[in-house]
Length: 293
Image (spheres, rainbow, N blue to C red):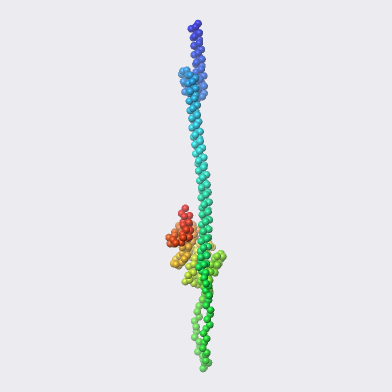
């Protein structure tokens, strides 16, 4: 009986052990532990070993989760950095556009100031003591004429008539033309400046009159005619004080005509030929830097 009792107890313990092992294997399989299942089916596994393996699985799972989170975080961080860089680039582009607009307005204002300075300088140079016409001298008294002895008197000799002198002086005509120019009467100023040149071609004001005639055409946007007159200032009047400005104005016209090559050429001529024209050189450099962008 004792032997049989022992046999029954051993059978029951063996059965209980197998049931425990099967239950553990099923539990581990449902948790994704294929390795645990194989070990539990091949032999008796202690509960402490199962706990260790579970802990290892939890550790691995935690590491995977952290890696996935880190990867996702890096992608999110990268996307955030890219968006931030694009935003900064847009801001820089907007700032650059605003700066270019300010530079353009400043250049326009400088051009206006230069024209005003040129106008005032020309007016000051032309101002001076007005030419006072010499008073007409009375002809000398002729000696008394005795009566002719006969009726057939000798005819007086014919005196050649001199051509009429032009009305006014180059200074007065120039000042009148400049006054009309300053008032914006450019069409009238064109005729008056041209009269100065036609009537007094050798006057010291001739080259300046040609320049301001060109300026009048420039202000009326008659650019081709203005170019021709600026060329006259440069090539016909070697000592003209307006040569440097004429080159600069040609550069401006070629800019307006979208001829970048000729504009750069004329601005460079200002720098090459007139290095002492500080104000004009600075303006030419500004124009060149803008065209070289």
